[in-house]
Image 1 (cartoon, rainbow, N blue to C red):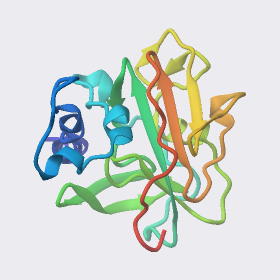
Image 2: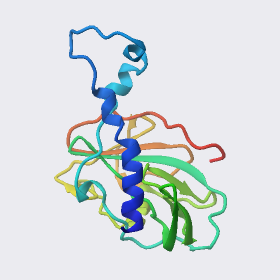
Image 3: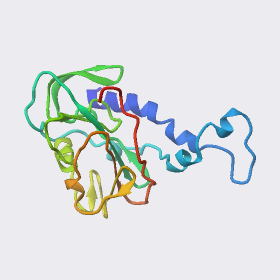
Length: 204
């Protein structure tokens, strides 16, 4: 099994619980027990399942951005979510890295070298060198997937909508900067309520 596929499947299994939050009592019925109030209604409204098929897991085909060095070094994190056809599109693991890669518990723990931006797992967390200025366009170029006003990775027919920290972002989507702790949501097709934030790993 290819490393990228193995990582995607491992994390997809974890993320697959997302649609379960929408499985609850029918409208008008009464829920009981601790689970009845354990999931905020806003999260239930925002939850979407991961799409099925290769279009929802586009592979890495782009080149490594910037200098590719052996050590990952200090990084700042941001989060990118991609939605198409009312489903989650996985942001591939391994963007900005060069093979051979080693997986540890479904995460890339080692690569031959690391570029200016990298993804280590298909969760949408993007790690960027703090000294560089990059954009969403740079991310998609490193991913090797198209991004225009009417095309988003494997999906076309636009328009492509963008949100940053829960607010609509006008103008060219590719020009959106990759800044520390930004929550960037890209959508094509039915509108998905965008998240306004993300809980980032410590130290990023």
